[in-house]
Structures are given as structure tokens and as C-alpha cells.
Image 1 (cartoon, rainbow, N blue to C red):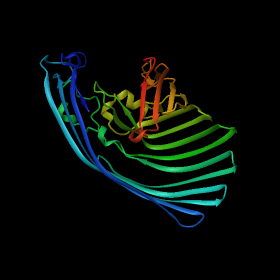
Image 2 (tube, rainbow, N blue to C red):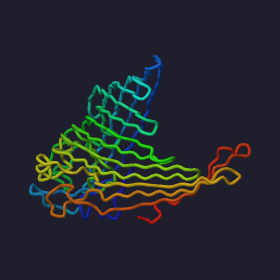
Image 3 (cartoon, helix red, strand yellow):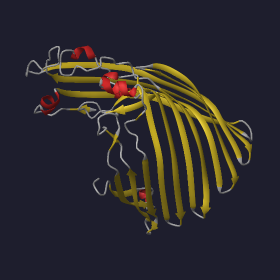
Image 4 (cartoon, rainbow, N blue to C red):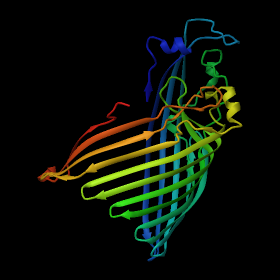
Length: 373
């Protein structure tokens, strides 16, 4: 990712800082998964994951000098390079048993171990259990718990040398930069899927998450690169209603969800924030950056047999009631809300059944974001 500021100096004139940034990542890894049928009622699943990532960051900042009171002392900019890099590793291994208690009742239980060795050095043992019950051919209940471990995205972290910017217009109000940590989560989930009519299926799912070191990402400064940070505590909950209908050549689907995620007390990358924001968040739960209350989506497609294969026109849409914004009163961080939005896409695909090497070829045309919203 490379970001170049306004070459005419607009960033520097209006904000006092112009950052030219470049982040790069090279990742190599291996994942292996397997299963073994232990008996008629037990199916074992197991796997491992290993990854090495090399990230580099180079941020060249043009800034102005300031005095002890923060007043600019010259209109001649200073150029300060800040270069960094890190080799990081992720490790994971899991073992799971699918136990058919009865023909209609299945218990999945297992455990996994994850470790990260990068900007943070952490690990966790994560148990999980899930029960699936099918009282009839058209009804399925599920109930589950899992503990999750989410390392911070290494490719987005460019740990700065804050002392380089002392006495300049880029000197942060807060000089604390605790490292970004892995998120740890207790996840509870329950749901129902029901076939109402031939071809029509509806589902209802609810979840609740208890989080420690809740990961969030925000855009700080002019660069269009998101940067991660942690809240000490957080929670999230949501409910989703879904419907699918398939009859003959017609496929329809729709989903609507209500959700919320909040965090409290920022414990990493504090230099992104002002002191009054940190003070407020240390004692109050606030909405995370990408939280919105309502989301809906839907779509439709028709499969037409046209002699050379199948012609499939399709349409889909996404609705959101608005992500977070600044509080109009200037009191609560993320206390405001952006306007709602709807985006729609249309497309048509021709799937060929031959002859010869053309079999399996699909040609499609799409209009993305049809109404330019």
C-alpha cells in the first residue's frame, strides 16, 4: 500500500503534516486439514496452520518546527523518515470430534491452540462445543459456545518512533504507544432453521460476544490506511433473520440483522487519540468504529436454459443504516451516525456447456453500484 500526499502541499498547509507512506507484506504459510472416521458415531477432524509474514513500513513526514507551547516557529518544512519492519509468525492446531448421539442429535466438541509471535507474543487454548438437533426433516436447532483468539493484523501495524517528532507539528498529544494485542473472545450462539413450504426456508440466529482486548481499526491522519488498536473490554450482540426461496429456475434470498458492538478503555496505540477522548472512553462504553445498528441484504437470480448452456441474470442489494461518525455535540467519541445507504448491483452470466474446450466457460457482465451511491 502506498499513499502520496497532495504534491502542492495542501496537507502540510492545512494540517501541519504531510505523510508519504508505504506498507508492504510478504506472507508464506501452510495449512493442512484431515478427518478420520473413528466409528459409526464419531468423526475426528484435525489440522494445523503455520504462517510467516514479513512486513515493512516507511513513512516520510514533512512537518513544521514548533516551540514548547506548540506554536509554529518556521514555514520551512522538515522531512523526517521513520522506517520499520518485523518478521511475525502465526501457529495453530486443532482437534474436533463430531459425535452422532442419535440420528437427529449431533454434538461437535473440540479444542484448538493458537499462538502469535510478532508485535505481540501471545497464545491461547480455545475450547468449543456445538449441539445440532433436527426434531423433524424441516427443522434444525443449534446451540454453541466457542472461545476465539484473533491476532492483530500485522500488515496494518507501522509502529512509530514517537520521539522523532518531538518539537514538530506531528508531535502527538499522548506519548504512549502500548503494543496492539490479540483479541480474546467468548462467543455464544443459538439459532433455528425451518422449512415452511417447498423451496422456502427461514432462519433465525442470535449471538453474544464477551471480548477482552477488543480489536478495532480506525483511520488516523490523512493516509487511507486503517490502523488497529485495542479496547480493554468489549461486547457485541446481534440477531439475524434470513430467508431463502428456490423453485424451478428462480432463486431468492433476503437477510436483515440488528447488531451492536461497544468497547471501553483504550489500552494500545494511545497516541492516536486526544487526552479528553481517552479519559471519556476509560469510564464509558462507546460504539466501535464500524458498528451500525441495522443491515439488510437480498438478491434474486433466474436460470434460463438457452441451448448453449444457462443464462443467469441476477440482482442484489445491501442496506446499512449508517456507520459511526463524530458526535455533533463533541462529547462522545463515535457518538454520531452517518446517513443510511443502499447499494445495488446487476449482472448477467452465460455459462457454456460446450462444445469441446468451451465446456465450463462462464462469460459475465456486471454493473456494480448501479445507482452510484
